[in-house]
Image: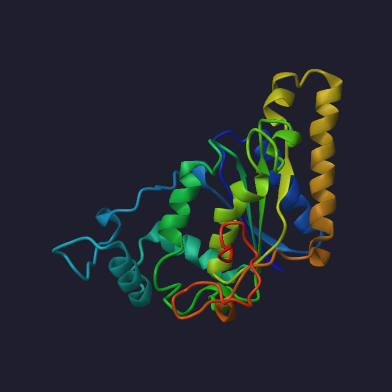
Length: 252
């Protein structure tokens, strides 16, 4: 198995960095070949723009999808994007490791998605359950500052499943089989009091839990998403189709 870890945290010694190192070690122990994209240390530019396209199809106006597809299909993608595409296209499993910042991912990771998941890699038909990465797996591992209870369906920070749904659905959009997320909660408080043995033990327990999670990754039940067969010609759920998302439901 070939695995790619896309890591987004500016501090190598952070708990996110420790989780990244933990999963790399466990994957290698299982015999996997592992690559990592450390976005901050790479200095990855998250801002899409005309400067990244040296051979424009339309020099008169910058249209992102037009230029992304032209570059991708012509082998003209910028070196930083092409390097990431090469990693993705060779990986059987991709894992995203990042902290939840402002109820979402760090901007550098969103920019990586904007620039690397280029139009051409997906098309109007080649997406969802017919996407280019069909048959490959993806998962998300996150840290959160608040306690786990605050990320429950009734929690003040909002349901963690809904917070992560945009990224999960993006991965499904690209064809991936999406595995359940891993989350470590209360990390901000634990780091502030890292000298207290109870907090250090709690962080170490999360690393042990992640090791066990990766160890049984082949047995995890994937998340469910709607596919092409569930939508009508208007892109709405058919009356008899199930709904696998709180953001997509039948009319009441």
